[in-house]
Length: 99
Image (cartoon, rainbow, N blue to C red; front, side):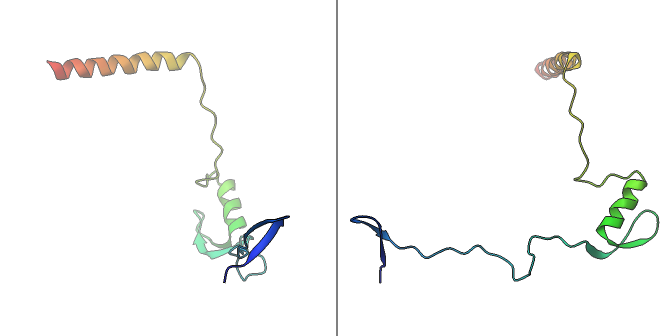
């Protein structure tokens, strides 16, 4: 059976079932755990805490992939020269193919 609801005087629409967001049964579904499987760091020790694993890596000068901060590429005079060199290289390759 179709259920209608009045949205304004003499204006009706089909009543839609309320949508529930898919959530976990866990008490805090959006919290990421600090524990992990025992993993060996380059110092030869095994760590079960992500925090301590990362701290040792940083202390040893390692960079965790995905968390590094990239430096912006410098813009300026070098880009024009490299562009001209690229065009010359392409021109040379095309001439080589044509002969």
